[in-house]
Length: 134
Length: 134
Length: 81
Length: 81
Image 1 (spheres, chains in turn brown, yellow, orange, green):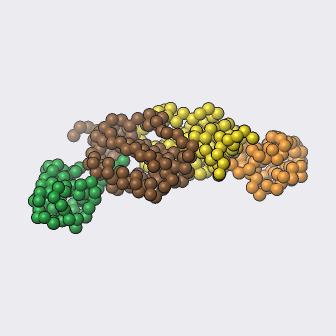
Image 2 (cartoon, chains in turn green, brown, red, cyan):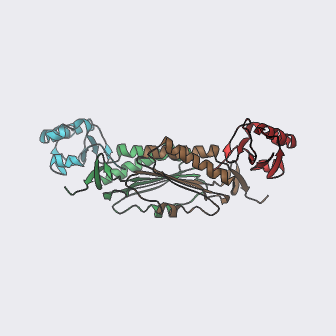
Image 3 (cartoon, chains in turn yellow, blue, green, brown):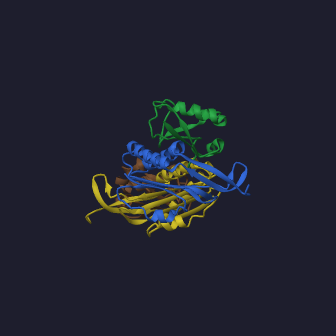
């Protein structure tokens, strides 16, 4: 399984990532997920979210999730994941995930499992930045 | 709900479509699905697939599916769908679907429902093109 | 009234044409058209159980009552994506 | 042995520092470290039930036996994505 992981402080270039995908006639289904910072947190309008990570552990835990995903869905051909760190403005993507597999059922299942699982175990935290500097 | 539908005889430009997405701080989840023609059909290696459509009905049925999707998941903010017609080489995308919604659960569910449903009702047919011209 | 009948995908090959026409009385149903088509093309009749039927751009069943100007489409299960 | 303890997210504010150090005997467990940390920072102790614990880059429980060179991290539930 091809893996690509990036924790980055610069904007996620989704179009460039999409253009850089290695097309394959083996994998009939490619899912791409963009997680975008919303402009509200509960009732409050926000400027964005600052993401903090314990980077060494986050990298290690992502790789363990990739291992487990490959074991659960051996047919999955590739996974690419980019997560922003630092401040991300509302409307910008904080997470981008791509999973390719021979069939769409396993691509959807593996992608959803990966996102659900990372939210349980990868040490990244959100800090809401209110609209007015406090 | 924003809708975009295209039945096209030219390659699906996924990167350009991605770049053309209208970013929104309302919709925290964007799913993009690419269906790629695989290089095998059963045991046989193939050159690609020719897609035939009853275009007027296909367009109408897609719009009815968008109506139903909007009714089932009122929070979905946009759907864009591009389907290739004519010959599509193995390794190229024949279908591209994008669904955006406030949260990822509904984005994933609506996108999967749309793909499953179109395969039941939209009048498009595949004709396998074998590797050697027959 | 004359009802055009369109054949899609491999139904076109089985019918030997993309389009035919069936003459039916006013108030006839889709079933009347089907019976005429299957009498002319028995190989299509053999696929009756898996045939999808549309009038215009909507799916309809055999009991649908046709009006002048309606067009019927017959095709095998769809396979988009 | 001296065990560095790292505090992440708002645990850093509650501890008043990103890092501390706890002296424990050889063969001590994570629990020994936790007890020392909670004695010094009662507000962290109040969050004990929802605290995640790592030794190095792996999650561990209170009974994990520490070795010289190990570093402990304490943090609230994660929220990536």
